[in-house]
Amino acid sequence: MYAVIDLEATGGKPGQERIIEIAIFMFDGRKIVDQFISLVRPEV
Image (cartoon, rainbow, N blue to C red):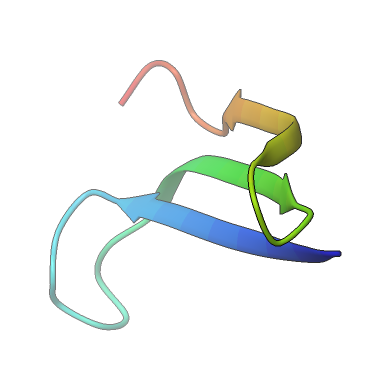
């Protein structure tokens, strides 16, 4: 089993942008068995 982590940011300029969403998907080799999704700064 392994985890896939997805980070969403406001743009592509390092040092100037912010992470706004984090998602983690647990994968057993055949299918997603669990997931976590959260907005970090919903006001952005």
